[in-house]
Image (cartoon, rainbow, N blue to C red; front, side, top):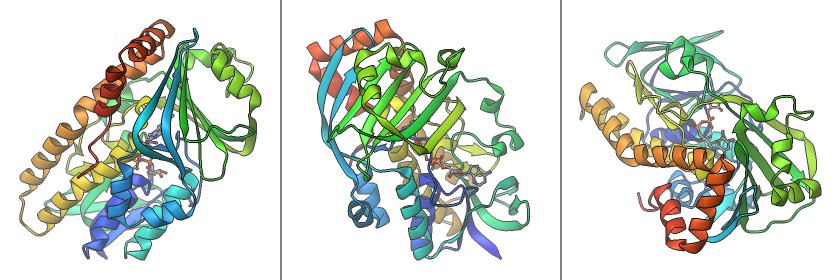
Length: 372
Ligand SMILES: Cc1cc2nc3c(=O)[nH]c(=O)nc-3n(C[C@H](O)[C@H](O)[C@H](O)COP(=O)(O)OP(=O)(O)OC[C@H]3O[C@@H](n4cnc5c(N)ncnc54)[C@H](O)[C@@H]3O)c2cc1C
């Protein structure tokens, strides 16, 4: 079968684009390497813009039904005892990726997309003129358009010879779920020397703990999941000592890259983290993944209906993507670097405490607008 669109990767960007495309009656195939449901490395904090995206996708009721935790307050601390508390400009959500990705995956099937999980894409060849061939270990699929939605890093990046994959990145991350602590309606971000750790509640009543740090922090650490650097922030140490970790939920990741990776490889259109990823400090990667799908989908439809040429499609996607995301990605990288260094973290926290409009500005500038 020749699909209109083949989506590689069934995470947020992949499933949401498949839902919008299938809703418009297109033949869509989604190929995902993991089996659903499964845990994924993430802070599981969904910033406020996602509510509109979920409404447009038709999944907001389901997300509310499973009891997504409401979050409207942020607490930020530095290792030297700096503390900044702030109300968020709306209500954000805490929901596990175990549930969220599964909801989107199921909904993509309900609206008519063909979805295959447990299927690793090994290669993509072709172009918009001749059509694409997408290869898995067992099968080869044909599509007119391919959306690359395979996330932060994949063997496919090497196969497609993307530039960023050759550069070493020092950032590593860990996530788990834990009981024993209640921090209702709050996202906590605790800085430490070399990184930061987020804590917030999800639908199960557990706390999601997720840290990102420079790889130097695990060097000779007896426990690589909880290196000593984390305990040097006493506010974080106090939290860690109260938590009882869920041994069934542990995700690690290395080589996390925050460079802008490019919107196209040849004619393959990249969305979500595959195009570029905002630093976790901003808690906005999932909203951006959903939004990038919303930018790409209308252009894909216009291209397939012959209302855009190939070069118009590529140019317009690039322009819109840059307009919406380039500044946010840069600011996110700057905040990430600053907050991973104790002195700068303390200075930033004190500045925000004394001049709250700066805090408001930073929050506003690292996320999108609510109306699309
Ligand atoms: C430490 C950390 C904490 C974060 N915390 C937050 C947070 O609190 N809030 C927030 O909004 N964002 C957060 N993010 C960012 C967020 O997780 C991502 O931006 C978001 O998941 C991007 O969605 P995506 O669909 O682009 O990629 P993904 O959700 O990663 O989906 C990509 C999918 O592609 C699949 N795939 C990969 N290769 C292949 C292949 N070859 N064939 C088939 N399938 C393939 C993968 O299995 C995966 O399911 C965090 C990121 C990190 C690293």
